[in-house]
Image (cartoon, rainbow, N blue to C red; front, side, top):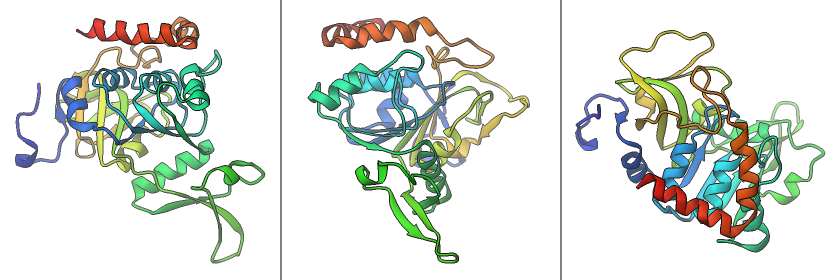
Length: 282
């Protein structure tokens, strides 16, 4: 059930419920900075595929652990820049479309900005907290500060200790997947979670795809609830995290990850995959 108020007439702070294609069309524009988070679990794959179908371009993609959905976005020509802390096909090997873009510029050149996991997580927390930067003890003994201009040393004003500062992340759009939402747009997730909450709170706009929309959310041990006022759009997309898993709904599709290695190694095979994805959606 979609909310019927126009954005300018919205009186109550709550998320709009809309189909995925409409939400992506309204939220994601060329040149945006997009964060799509989920740590091995609840990865927003269906939303990534919709961005590909809508042929968004010049995106800055942000993610702590870019895996195959970012490989697909990069190979489809959606990205010009990647901000990340690790990249790979988990349990299988490299991201071949990512590597091709960096090494040869196909289909378009890709700039990279590399951080540590701790650095990325702290950047989201700073963004969600309304702070300009985060401070941590990371990066000592690594080569990352020499290659990443957004890593700076800073002296503690109280002890003089040398620390590391990284700028806050405030994406234009954060995209996550969760198990459930209610009809007012309150979102609930449980199981292994990463920085989804922080990414949504740091972003200017947000999209949450969910397995199902229910009348009421029941308590879940260790669950995370994002209130409707913090979310721009909610859209019901069953199996929206496949081939990653959604605890309580389906398991990880390991065969898909293995098969992706062969699909992504060859440009022609990958291009056929993109065409097939478009045909399946039409």
